[in-house]
Image (cartoon, rainbow, N blue to C red):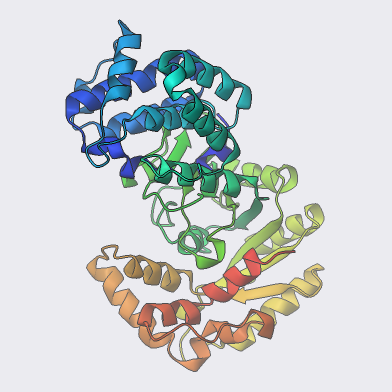
Length: 441
């Protein structure tokens, strides 16, 4: 399966069939499965969507069993059913939209074959509207002058097409252990999709894709595909995945990435002492993967280590593209003992001595940004997280720890409203960093 398909957002949670009785929903799913088996039986993504529909539409998915007898009669029965909300309309066009979305989203020849079979089943009476619908789905257009149950579904298909047609920005993220790389990524995405330092490390490269629109679902490709990956699935690697990649698709919460295809490529920590495979994979990624920008994360509490010097030298020798150096964890500095401005100046001098010219240095508190976004979205924080959020509100309200002030003027952001968490996002430096990451180059 192409991992890039994880950028596709789903509309199943607002599916009109959701209102129907279980018997009808089972028949509807059965018809979908017939077409998936026939036209996309080897397509992992189509099969994953089918499983998603079973999980979300059926009240008791384990009681469902596929039946292929009298399938034509079942199709006619399903398509003849009148919708509860729109009694004038049946589900026939809703069904076609689902089938094409599952089986032929990026395959026009396949789409035409499916439409031809549906035309034979529906007959001449519905032929004109069916062909209009097939054309609209293939080309991401709306059906004019007639509103029906497919409006929302077609709009979602259109958004997906427009989103995937844009050029994606690939951003590789690298760091030594304990720099806060995973926390930074969780903050940028606005959701916890990456395990942090306190949890088990993995020698896998994670591809984190932004989706076309918010569908309240996170998908994960890790040996098998789960388009509705629960938290414990996201936090645990599949034991049967013998490869070196895991891919996740979710809608990023950052306004800067709202309509922008972005993929963060999260490489393993290069100095994990228990497993040298981590460094090998990270170095191979840096040299071999195509990406538009590198983010190198430094631990502001522990700068100038031998591990960082070795990795900085490797990056300098093997990567000649654009780099953003993120200095994290500066919120741990103590008054009268540490200086944010002196630290940034020292980092700049060290990087220039290594050979980096005019390095872009971005101070942040990734943890402050992560907690602020979690709280803004109504995610439950435990007692320790709530106390830490309050501490960071107080600390980053002090001028020295308002990290956005240390960015160049063109990346400065001054107005964020009166919301405390929005102010914390500003002071954490994450908004200025996002402005750099997502700007057009």
